[in-house]
Image (cartoon, rainbow, N blue to C red; front, side, top):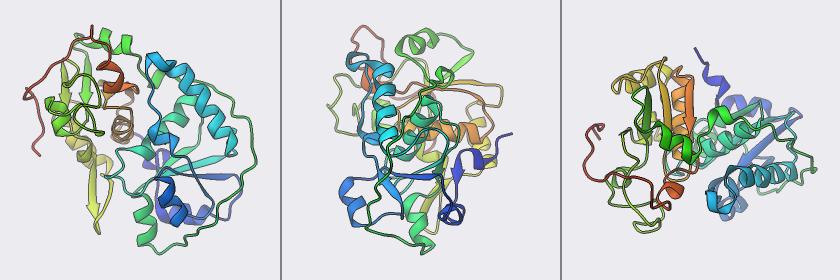
Length: 290
């Protein structure tokens, strides 16, 4: 069974590491918010949230090259501990988890998401700063882990395989085909969902304590997934719009002890642009009580 420390770090744990060497903290919030205040030593990498990967812009290969350069520029070579955070776990569309997934895909071994995000840090009244660090550039050596990511072709080939669960974790309006994306109803050329997929809205992986969203406990996550016949032996292919919310779900599934999980990172943003690919719309056959 996985321990949450493999994926998450609590604010108190991060605070204890602050005076340690070989720690890189990535802030994924909007640059203007970062400039106002941030966790000491944190470096803003907004591209973690904004970059869209599609076959047309070079796919995962180009994405890997781009982020290897970005991460190297902020002092990551793979030997350090990296902690990624966002403002709050439920208002950033999984951006810190997206950063976690990108680093793991590129082969980094020691990455964690700050559970509860920046708001959890503020709740504990830990220090904040305006000071912007000047990291020493390093070379990030890519060691791609294709076992955790899905291509469009692999997702397509899995559609009618009953042994593989296709899991959509987008917001309700996207699942129904009312909106194409969080960027607006018509941002993507088509609305709908990938056929044969079930739906668990990504918000369901979290619970609130003191008004702040944290990941649910492994026990509660297993209870959630069991309602959809997802258990430790399941094989799950997940997607959202651009790999953020599905990265949140990726971590949630791993916390629940489900090992065979792959993230279709390009997700609906890519799928909807290939007009030869099938889609479904309308009310789901299987849904989760909101």
